[in-house]
Image (tube, rainbow, N blue to C red; front, side, top):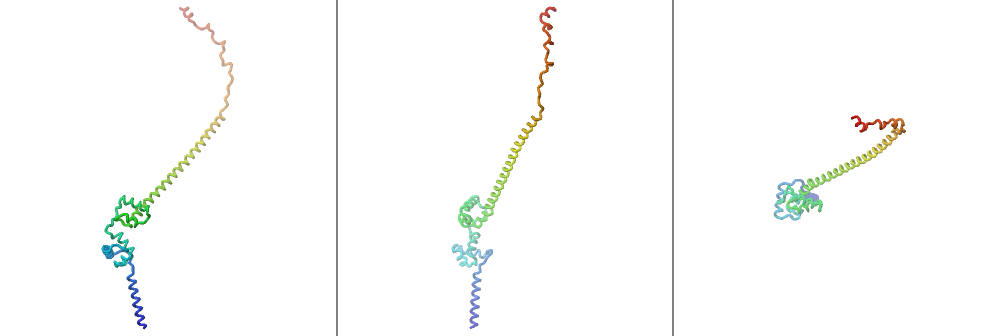
Amino acid sequence: MDNKKACSSNSSSSSRTQKQESEVIRKGPWTMEEDLILMNYISIHGEGVWNNLAQSAGLKRTGKSCRLRWLNYLRPDIRRGNITPEEKLLIIDLQARWGNRWSKIARQMPGRTDNEIKNYWRTRIQKKEAAVVVLKQSEEISIREEYDCYDDNNNNNIKYDQNSSMMQMTEMSMDQKSLPPVYISPVDDDFLPDPSSAQSSDCLWGVDDLWSMH
């Protein structure tokens, strides 16, 4: 009886280990053999449900891994690189409407993968937008600083003008105070001409005197 129990336990443990080995999921890079198995299976049976596809194809991969491998690398209609300006505008528009739903966005762009669209958005568009925002903020700060500096200078000039005008008025008042008083002296009679000293009309030459000389 003990031998039978031991044999049965050994057989059950070996079956469990075989089952666990068969259920081991592989991770990491795909091999060329796995790519060929996936491509041949989809070419015959179509895509279908990815979890069932992985088991049916005999791949020790998850359904998600099979889906991403097919959509991002093995599809025959994949277009890589050279995002056109029209595609860029479409990515910006769809991302603004749907957010980071890259698979949904990729369905609107035939030949483009959700992984490529996501990478393009993060490395090209999002970084440029962040740089533009930082540039605008720095420009606004510099403009604000220049305005504040101009305003301070203006206020200082006004204060200086007010102070200088007050100083000028003070100096004028001081000058007026420092000027000596002006006295108007009375007219001296000695400086006035004496009417008696003036020559009389008898001493002057006339026309008749000139005719008498001839």
